[in-house]
Image (cartoon, rainbow, N blue to C red; front, side, top):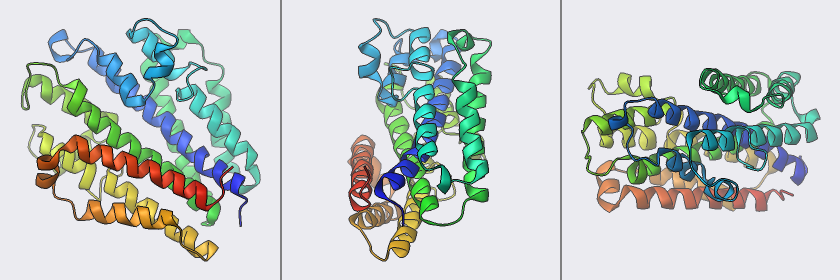
Length: 316
């Protein structure tokens, strides 16, 4: 049985690796949009919308005067003063991994440690237009390497279940926030669903969660319908970044922990209640009651789940 601080380190190690990958995807899709002809970009504050989605507005505004492409990219990728930058996330993940080194397989630790060693050498010059796409691809690949090493070499013990719960809580949060931001910020004023701009931005949204090709396979229609995109990212159990997929995995991990420790917690109840809500949801009802309200409620419940896990297992 793990000590609370070790359980916390495993939970947050996996969560911060997932956050680093999600941040890379956010920056990548925004960079793609910035390269489009001006009529397809949407609001002039596209980069501000990235800060909102990443919840980095406060740290950014404390340091920068203008939400320019260069400033936002620097803040989200390499800024040490931003605890959610890719650099900070990987450093925190590595530090957490180091504190539970004996609970990790060699492959998991080396994937984490080597990623940090290389990332710590990067400088602002590596964020130039010719190098940024390659850097973001590298971040995503290293995150996948960590995840593959965890899935392929870790014993299915409590250490594994804590890490998986952390990863999928973070992924669910990211998907919900990106979808919510699209509805309230990205769509340009004066443009409506079905417009060329709207189509471009829905495609960009899907790319930001690695769902573009999967969506095109699931929905043979070449257009991007908001209803279908929302259904795909919320209720499709086969989509690895959908909310219901994440909560299927979270519920399984928490149930495995309950079996290991011989007791259920309030976190089990919250996860199962959220999963039932998603499994019984109907997109027509969600849109009628308000997608924004649905997603805000989901994010609140997801945050409450993190608190309950921390309380139940004495995270320190």
